[in-house]
Length: 136
Ligand SMILES: Nc1nc2c(c(=O)[nH]1)N=C([C@H](O)[C@H](O)COP(=O)(O)OP(=O)(O)OP(=O)(O)O)CN2
Ligand SMILES: [Zn+2]
Image (cartoon, rainbow, N blue to C red):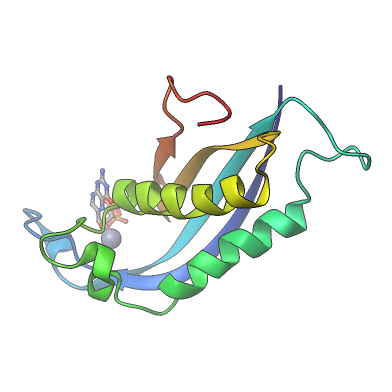
């Protein structure tokens, strides 16, 4: 099995609702996002997926978050997801997975995981479910 990953970043503010401490107050981060793709077969160039193509897809979603207050986005408003690193990884996983499934309907590649770094010392990851096969 091959696996490739790319890393991108964006800057955004958030506050964690109901957090028992400082993180309940508005504050900002430079978030780093890593995205991993896996598959068994390489193309004629010897690539699983072109890094540049994968970066384009990821950037198109990070653009929506860049210089935003994440809590203002519909998916992260009151009553929806609390904007933790875990929930951002979950959200980005499902957004990016839709594109991967649409653009590679032959199922040669699959999204494996999305990792979100909230600071240089803390990250959260959302991984493809153990029971999801490559065509899931
Ligand atoms: N599991 C999670 N824990 C925390 C999250 C999160 O998203 N998932 N988020 C926060 C805060 O948003 C905070 O900004 C980051 O926390 P932390 O790394 O503790 O912040 P510091 O950079 O101030 O940490 P140092 O103690 O200076 O290393 C909190 N927890
Ligand atoms: Zn934070």
